[in-house]
Image (cartoon, rainbow, N blue to C red; front, side):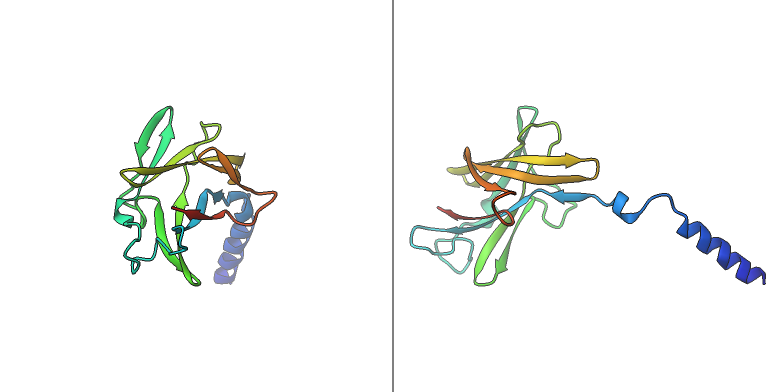
Length: 158
């Protein structure tokens, strides 16, 4: 009987939690995907292409409080906040954008190599438990809007 009473007490305590998983969940939407091609339509993220971009040279920088900071977090699986992957018949790069809550339109710089850098800006919809992209600009031109486009994806010609 004592065993049954213990099970009932524990079950009641667990089921009477004051918060739900939904209340504790945090939604983070801060990435964008690119496929990158040259003017001939060749996939520049495919390492089998002799003209491909050397992903070891790609660097991300976030502008925070007017200071440009190179992003590298050694404890992460993708420490430079991007990764290249195969999607159907092409390669894509997924970039995690600056999600600073202190900036109006946080800026991310993608340095493809020493001479080619693109600028991303993003506008977020912030709530107490979410950060979701609303608009994205590439080099000052709006390229994505949550009300118009599906997931943030762009074919970039280099």
